[in-house]
Image (cartoon, rainbow, N blue to C red):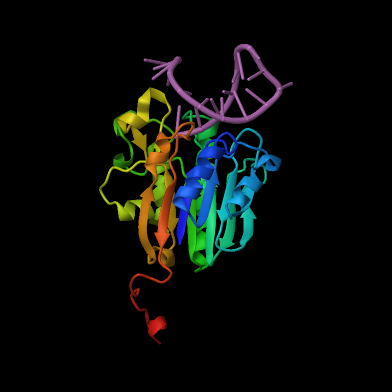
Amino acid sequence: MKIATYNVNGVNGRLPVLLRWLEEAQPDIVCLQELKAPQERFPEQSIRDLGYDAIWHGQKSWNGVAILSRVGEIHETRRGLPGDPDDSHSRYIEAAVNGILIGGLYLPNGNPRPGPKFDYKLKWFDRLIEHAKGLLDSGLPVMLAGDFNVMPTDLDVYKPERWLDDALFAPEVRAAYFRLLDQGWTDALRTIHPGEVIYTFWDYFRNAYARNAGLRIDHLLLSPALADRLVDAQVDAHVRGWEKTSDHAPVWIELADKPKRRRKATARQTA
DNA sequence: ATGCCAGACCGCGTCTGA
């Protein structure tokens, strides 16, 4: 099963690129971010014509997240993160699809730092960490996928020294990412490509894509049961080179139907 | 410190993004 995340940067303006990529890549499940479209302007029919069901949480002008599936019904479990009833941004949608619980997220950018937007980012991150703990504790196969707006390490930034004060790379934001990871999540792309320079975003400015001046900010995090099924993870970087393309590239993983190898048996499992 | 590009909108400039 192939599961992808793609920040499309405007689902309507990007529709030809999105449809072309869906046909080419044939993902089974897709998390989309930055729809930049109100609920009633999601291009449901075009996506349905390619064989995908969809749920989405739109918002005028900004944000917006969706989950697509061509491998069975999408059972929505939540839209919006708990913890702040006043949060009106459409940044989180969660559903059970084909035996996996999937949280699709668009974490706030947070610039400028310091400032209220940065405070909102840290608070949103705390709420995500709190919610993610419950997801892991459920023992279900769970994944969190989306645009996290954080480069975890120096390896994930073309020029780390230039980004130290930026909301995407600030120490407290990276610390939050690792607090999340330390709950027991596996960063799929980094696991398949340890030590490799691999980016998911290239600025529209300064010819960034051609210079490979990129960032790795789109992540797929796997619970232990799913990590055992991870067989591949890649970035469709060539899509970033298409006409009228997003500044992000699609990122995907391939999961085996069954664990690759037996996990260490515990007393309970062997009993 | 800012612009560089791009999308959305009560558009012909302003806001936001990363």
